[in-house]
Length: 163
Image (tube, rainbow, N blue to C red; front, side, top):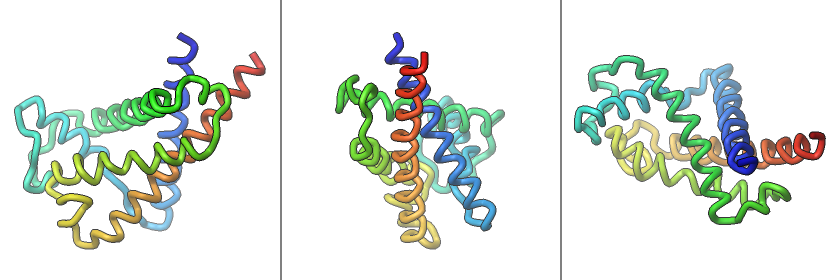
């Protein structure tokens, strides 16, 4: 049970790190993913629509922003569970940087091959106005998420030692 709680805490911390990065970018007018679109996508799934020509033209779904943000954090937690499946629970007790960064970068598979095509943006954002910039931003953001996994896991380990 303690391990599950640590995984959840690490997932929240890593996702929060990613959000802090997005906030810093927003200060410089650099846009990141609008989680309303994630909520709209999930909401549309309840109506049997999984793929959009352009999700920005799809009718907004009630509470899509809240749904998107909740999904964002659940996904962040789920990827930490993936890390533990690959590297084992001992990684949580003795975290190292490389597995965290690997998982962070591995998570770019989700936006490149699932979300962006489903949103009508093409594989790896190929239909976006500046696909290479979108790809680079996604890779950097997911690298930051991986860094967040490591930082949150260190915090979790130190907290456990303290308690």
